[in-house]
Image (cartoon, rainbow, N blue to C red):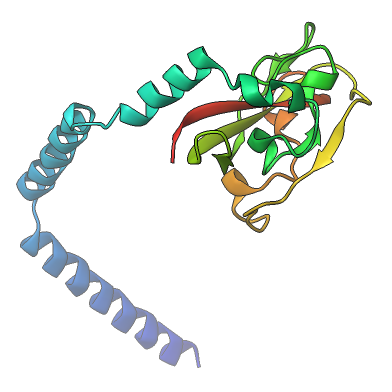
Length: 182
């Protein structure tokens, strides 16, 4: 039995050695260095590719104008920016639609949603960031799930405590900032 296992081991060793030698013959250090160089040049070129900043400009213009027609509703769950927000509104906790209340920090990670503004009938990308570091505010609680994805798609899921990435991971409230047009 030991003799059979020894022959099998020798056979596997010789097959593995031939395979490794064949691979080394077909690809050398120079081809590896050439491919690595191409990859590094490719990565250096990516930031130089054209980028459409029209959406950012439109969102900035919208933020400057404000959505005064709906500003009275920013403490209601049916406010247009809150279409995918699940949590407590920062507007009810001493903050604003885009700023955390004093004493809390914005989460390092967020989820996104696409909401339509009924005023201009355009869709906007909304970044929902939790405000962290203070105990939960018992203000306006919302649970909107428009176009929510299952939990395994974390960037699109609103049922997670996004404060876990911060040093102080207590959840306080959630803000809804416009990132761009959809």
